[in-house]
Image (cartoon, rainbow, N blue to C red):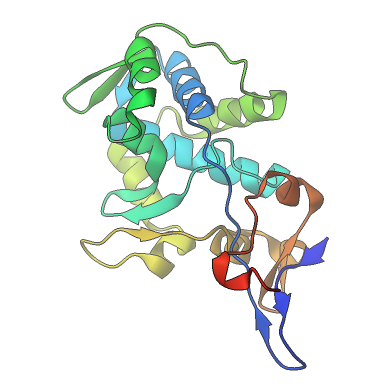
Length: 207
């Protein structure tokens, strides 16, 4: 396990951001799988809450989120933002067709049209989706909104009527325990490193 930061001198450490590559095909399969476990239909807000909880759980349990998405704090709670953009047809146009083939949207509801399969999902990811449905699938959408509003990582970053990212470091701070967050820095395992984007931005290119 690595305590994650760039050493800049005897007293300073520049923290690195934990970021992953969003996988739109996997996101479509994960959303469709959740719908298949919810009698084929649910409200969009509920689907997003379940997907956030699944991403978070898999990140904490296995080191990386299922979709690789960026999590955001929105007025209705935490949301995997690129997955929401897929449903709203606001992601890259090349990915409109798979969503249309798998799901249909009417008002605030999403329905499964045809399963895209689960070829992109691993056994641990499917197990996580099943676990989240078992724990939260019967809850009313506004109950889930209320519960996710109380999550400390959401409360730490949300500003009224705003849209702000929820760093994965913050999830580790609140839920990772001493094994995953200590000395005010996340402790990163090999599973996380293997799925992360390059942690160095352009300003660090000479390091």
